[in-house]
Length: 457
Image 1: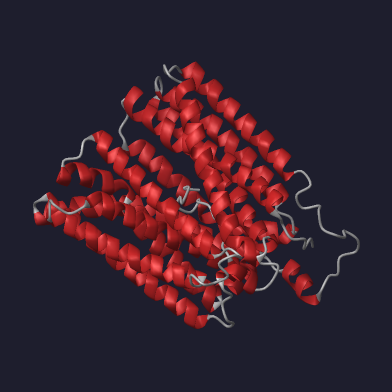
Image 2: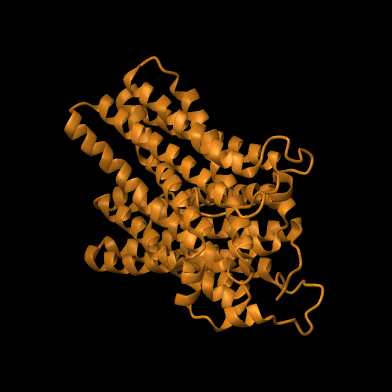
């Protein structure tokens, strides 16, 4: 098995792959969403269901990670996942065009397309994270996580801007050409970035096969999953990922409507407010990366402290949103920036902890562990938007007016963040060995998939 350490050149190559993954996903979840609702006048429930479905499909992440563990190589899974994702993206565009004349059959094709998108994201994203857990050294994890995450965000932004210009004015032919071109470009970039990535070990001759490695190779997926789930730290961290990401994603679909309904923000101002939140997330991410740098060397606290503190401050910021729902003179923009900083800090620190736990559980099962936590994140993102909007509607029906309804939802979010911090403290207590300072444990990137973030991939 290759054990060479990744430097910045390899980390940037992985970041480019993650940016390609995000580029395809952002078109299917944003651009096609808008076309279905606006140009085709279809119910908004349809794209909402398709996005939720692609998260549901990602429950296969543990199996994908196990496959990478079994083959002891991540490259085939990343390349194969990107090809499946690209195919799903082209089919989704075709399905959207077909919906204009045959809505039912177009929707069926879209369901198949988003299934492929979920499978592609699972195979590529899980294997990428597992490879980083194996090959990125402790002292580079925080800067590496932030670097790859930023590259993914840049991929989102550049793709959204370029595709938006290319398909304006909209026509079905242009949409199909742009979607096909994007899938081809991302597949080629991924292939170039993966070329020789796992062939740079100092020696490829006669790897030593230990008895433990042989035992792991003989396990089937059920045995491997049961072994991972039997680890108390893995179970506790799974609960933490689900709860914290559920709280994080629940706010996404209600923050802008809240600003418009309660504070009278125009659509442009609510969009700017969302931008301020994203800026705060970026600041929080960079802060954790700085705390994990070798120059700071742990003087700004451990990664675990940032994870717990980020959740607690996210809870505090959510309490501020409760107050803003009840008081018109509350500084909403400052509150939202504070929430973003806390969100960015805890999410990146959580990814660092994920990298550490994937390695500490023993070599040979990094992919299966990453798959488990990736599935928990996907489930949280899939449920978060649905539960956030449903809770808002329910609170409005029960309480009869918008301010109290939004206050109740943000209060529930604060409670979830506080409980996430408590679970993180339990995880710290379960640790069987001292946690290295951020300089030795600096964090790593996710995906997705996590803020998104998850794609949120």
